[in-house]
Image (cartoon, rainbow, N blue to C red; front, side):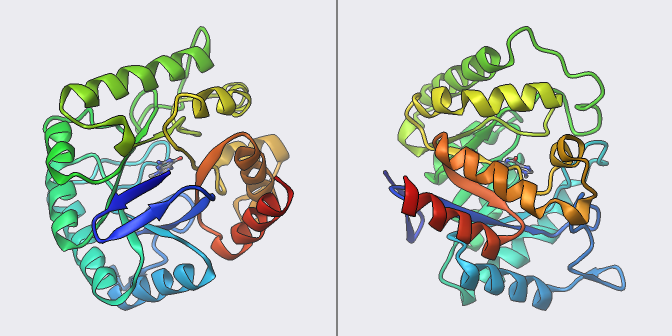
Length: 278
Ligand code: 9MG
C-alpha cells in the first residue's frame, strides 16, 4: 500500500510513525515548547522536526490549532501564521513527508503550496470548502472521527454502539469523498481517541480496530500521552510514555499503519518489536 504525498512516496506495507510538531502555545502535552517570549521560534521547530526525522519519523504533523478538550478556537490568520512558515522551512531543509493538521481549506492550500504532502483533518473535511480543497490538492487525507467540538466534546459523549457508529461514519465519509472525486485510495481513517469518547468507548474502539482495518483504508491512531492513558493507568502527563507505547503496540497488532506520537525514538522501538514478532 503506497501513497503519493507530493514529491514523496509513503509506503505503508510496514507501519510508519507520524511525529507531532505543535506550533500552538496551548497544546495539552507540549504547548508552548516552541515559543520564546511569546513568539514561535522557527529554529526550534526545525530542530524538533530534524530530531524526529533522525529518530525514525516518516511524517511530521504540523498543527496550528490546539484540539485538546476545552481549547479556544484560533483565527484563520493565526493558523496560517503558525503553520505555513514552518512547513516552508521544513520542506526546504528536510527530506520528510509534512502533514498539515487543519480543517481549513485556506490552510490546506497554503500548506500544500509551501510543501506539505498530507492532510490530517480532525473534522474529516466537514468544514465549508474543505472537500473541494482536498479534492484539488490530490494529497492523502486522514479523516478522523469525533463527536462535538474541542470546546465541548468531553462533556458528555454518548453513543448507542460506538464501534458501529464510528464504522458507519467511516463508510459515509468515504462515500462523501467519492462524490467529490476523491478515491478511497487517498484516504486514511482514524477513530479519534480522545475526541468525544469516554474511556469505555476508547477500549471498545481499540477492540474494533481490526474491523476498521478491514474497510480497506490504512488506519492512523493517536494515543500518545492522551488523558485516557492518564485516567486508565492513573498517570500524570509526564508519566504516560510506557502507557503510550503499550497502547501503540496493541494498535499495531490490531491493524494500525500510522502512529501519531510525541516520543518518536521510543515508538520506533515498539514498531521494531512489532515487525520482529508479527
Ligand atoms: C491533531 N490530532 C490530535 N489528536 C489526533 C488524533 O488522535 N488523530 C489525528 N489524526 N489527529 C490528531
